[in-house]
Length: 409
Image (cartoon, rainbow, N blue to C red; front, top):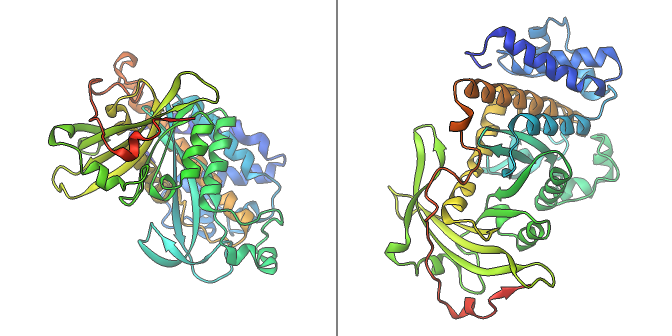
């Protein structure tokens, strides 16, 4: 809970949110249980499973809250859409950023939907866990989780009996994490969230089909790639290694807990992008690198496709937005019990995760409102591209591999 928010303002904001989504629960019992469940997720509960949530909200047993997740009639996708509308209304600006990433939920046993031994970036090792792909929305006003999909490995989708036991719909077949990411981007585009940028880590950025998909949908992006990423032939680390010393410039990629996060950046333009049958380029492709000031050997690499007017400073800020989904994961797990569920079935997972996202969105909006009370609107940045000089330049890349075929139609 946000300590400096008056209880009356907190309760009023939460009641408005409940009224906003109440029609998704036609019967009064699940509607009341939903309210109790979200209040419990926002409350000072040690571990936010059904037993402890029930005790916190005054239920004699967890049966009602468990029924809400397992058997009540309500669609978590409708609540997801309400979360997106709520976030768009309170945090949305035109050049918002959609951030794609996945996180792991360590689980015991073999019956929880999608669980198996697999690599979890959250744990940093192979664990018995569930993996889910999330989308977060970020602007200068705030950031929150806005979509989620549970990854089902082939060990699940190839086993019809196992899927039946976990109540996984028959139409849910195997989809890669990148497939799930593309579906979420399309949903966000069709919804109320205003955004023009997408960013993601190297697991998604190294996929050329994902990058082309973003371009085909008219979105700009800055995505991380591994150092072995080929750029029209040569590896990106080889090409960045050609940058002269004066090509590196110190730029911020956003504010951290101790102020602006400063790195040294180098960038080069790649062949431009034309619309089909167009006579003029519509977007510029880039490659860029971020170097740790204190540890110069630590270099991260990115590919980008951006409006023609975008600068290296702009791209650095968008790249820095990727950390905001990590902040979302941390706060949603610590404050809203995102990872503290004890459900096994597919639908129950979606219901818990979606209600945790709802609680997290409420925290994000409440925090943004409190910040803005003490700041004049004219002093707040309304765009990612405003905080630093527009003169940030790039160096002219000269390689035969890139000079062959300057245009991509």
